[in-house]
Length: 447
Ligand SMILES: *Cc1c(COP(=O)(O)O)cnc(C)c1O
Image (cartoon, rainbow, N blue to C red; front, top):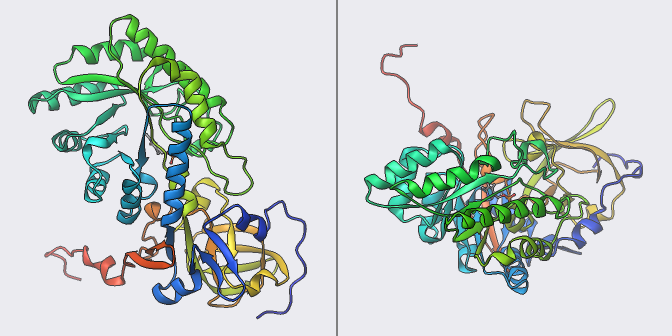
C-alpha cells in the first residue's frame, strides 16, 4: 500500500454509506466485504475473474413488482414491455418474463433474443427509426403484437410487406410530442429536431392514411420522449396530454384507437438525483390518459435493470502522477461506455471492508484504453488501493454490457447472475481466440 493519503476534501458526492443505504441489493459485511444479495462480490471475482457484470435476480423481481403494483394501484389497465436494449442477457430476460413482462425490441436480433428467452412475439413491440424490410417481415411472420411506425415512408413499406404476407400489420404511430424531457442531449428523443417519431401536426393525417392501406390495422399511438428522465413529471404529463388530445381527435373522425403506448425513460438516481417514482408516473398517466378507456403500455428499460447490476473490476495499479492520483482498473470504456459517452456518473464502491474505514483522498479512476476519454471518474474520493483490490461500479445493469465493444482487442466481459445465495455465469467471458475467430484473410493476400 502507498503511504497514507491526506483526508478527503469536501465533496458533493454521496458517501459510501449513503450509496449503500440507497441500494437494497448491496450490503457491507464486516468480513466478506461488499455483498450482492447474499453473495460476496470478492467470491465472484475469485471464481469468474474481472471485469465482470453482476446482476441481482431479486432486484429485477422487486423492481418489476413495484412498477406493476404502482400501475395497478392507480387503477390502470397497463402492460409492461421491457426495453430489451437496456440489457439483453437471456437470464435477465427470463427473470423479467417470469414476472409477466412483455418486450420492446428495436432489431431482429433483439426479437430473436426475446423469443429465445420465452417472450412471445405476441407480447412484443417493435420500435425504431430504421427497421429494414427483412426485419419487418421477420416480426410479422413471428406474430408481433405491435409495430411502432416512425415515418410516412415506413408505413408504406410495412403495408406492402404485410399485404404480401396476406396480413394486416398491427401498427401504432410513434408521435413526437415536441416536449423537452430535460435529460442529456444524447438521450432525449421527444423534441421536434430529434430523428424519432412523427411530428404531432402530421400524425392525424398519417393515421387516416394507415386506415386506408390494405396491409395495416391502425391500433393506436405511441411516444417515447427520452431516457433517464429525472426532472419530475412535467415532460411526461405534457407529452401524454398531447397524446390524449390526439386520441380524442382521431376518434372524432371515426378512427379507432385501441391502445396508447407511453414509452419508457423513467430515470434512476445514479448520484443524488431525485428520481420520480413509479407511483408518480402512474399518476401522470392516469391524469392524462385515464379517461380514454384504453389500455396503456409502458416500455421501461433502465428503471427495471439499471440498479440491478454492478460492474466488478480490479485495480491494475495505483499511479501517483505529478498532479493527481490515478486508479488504473482492468475495466475500461469498452466495457462501461456511459461515462465517456454521456458524462455519466456511476458510484464506485471498494469491495474490501477495510477500504471502508481507510483514509480517503481524490483519485481519477481510469481504464487502460488508449484514449483520454477512458476515464470513469475524476477526483473521486476513494481510499488508497493496491493491485488486485476490487471495486464495483453501481447501477451498471442498464446500457452497460449491451454497449460494450472490443476496442483495444479487449474481450467482452463475463456476466453473472446472483439469486439469493447462488451465483452463476450467464455469459462466458470472451477469449482472445473468439476475437480472431471471425477474421479472414483474402486468398490473394501474400505478405
Ligand atoms: C430506449 C427505449 C426505451 C427504454 O428507455 P429507458 O430510458 O431505458 O426506459 C423505451 N422505448 C423506446 C422506443 C426506446 O427506444
